[in-house]
Image (tube, rainbow, N blue to C red):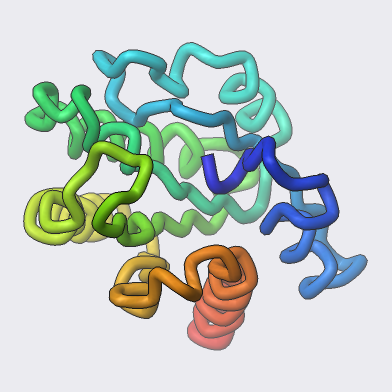
Length: 178
């Protein structure tokens, strides 16, 4: 998981960097878990995790959902359930007493010879249009973590900084609209 990212120390994970950028007026928490799926029928559904219950109990004001890549692996045989599961997930936050602002993310691109057994064209041609539909159904804003990183394999390792700045920019843009 890019969010959990067990390979990095806490201070180098994007939620920690985002906390630094947003400042003391915000509390950013990391509820990511590696290899989890949005699909309830996936091999490791996030729905079944204690952290999902914890984040709901926290009753956040802002939620950033960055999931999908693990669904695009062998779990994609259940792709007909992806939109409905994702919509239900987003609404599970939107119906909290805090009525948080929810952002959903396009997945970062996959590259040739990447360790992930996912073709980028599957993300572009199948998953991202579904995320567009999910956004329309839930009024969640989309954060595009895919397009700016296409063809930037060399940049990939530094992609955490890009992810943080993209999330921060999208958040600030949405606050101007309110």
